[in-house]
Length: 75
Image 1 (cartoon, rainbow, N blue to C red):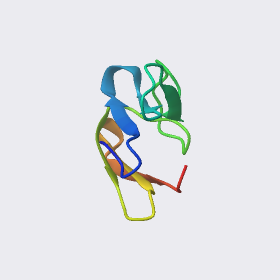
Image 2: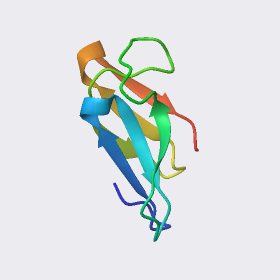
Image 3: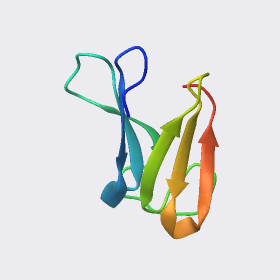
């Protein structure tokens, strides 16, 4: 997803994380989940498949293998 500031958010499904790339940057930062660690606690994801942002830049993650949608407040 591309936000209004030109930042990119990526659901990295096989690594169980969400990556954030600042506008114009090549290196991302993990902003949700833990790289290569799956789980069902609040800070872990298991196959995040889809993401969305609302108008306040809150992030919604379809956490597929946990059958839930996680919401992360504006990062």
